[in-house]
View 1 (spheres, rainbow, N blue to C red):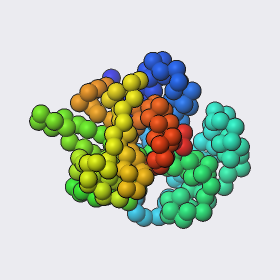
View 2 (cartoon, rainbow, N blue to C red; view 1 turned 180 degrees about the vertical axis):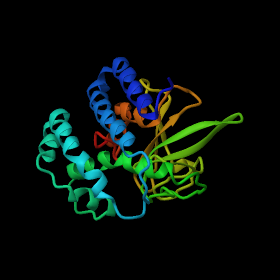
View 3 (cartoon, rainbow, N blue to C red; view 1 turned 90 degrees about the horizontal axis):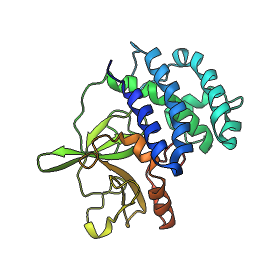
View 4 (tube, rainbow, N blue to C red; view 1 turned 60 degrees about the vertical axis):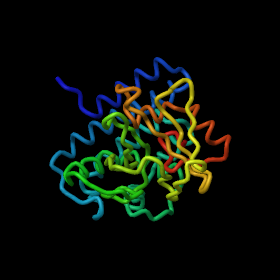
Length: 249
């Protein structure tokens, strides 16, 4: 039986956790979250809606208390405390991008809504754009990816919410549009040579990019999470991530 995309993410997280002790705790947490996301995604089969429309809380409501219970059990203490008694209204606030949520509330809402957004994105079909924001839900990208194209690789961005992939120019900052190579430093860590930081000295942002031409087994959203040394390097050098991941990095 072929693995689902959720299975591949979970298996990759376990594989990297065994190989890189410095990321084991974070990847173990992610694997548990992804297990819930897999169930929610399956439970939403046939769900209709729009990524730019209203959130259907009648469908999501029964799942939310279970997710809060999971987070309260497995998350680091500050995040676990935030899950206790969290109101369902945070989902609608996050979906509308109200900007009034705490970091912890946004993280919980974001990770809960990802399977819902991915389900809706799957119904939307293919997209063609060169914009810096997701063409389906207008969210920022979570991670970049290089896929084989002829003798080189083409760059794509992956949405932080709905996981839509879209093509983006290779040498350009997705935060501010800077194109001068001298202002776009790249850093690679020895531990994960197929993952790199692509930073911008103009706006001070960075994004991690996973090079599938170097490691075809990589799962971008998971390998990006495991690349903690890259996040530490970027932070020490004054760069801010375009979209924080599950660790807030």
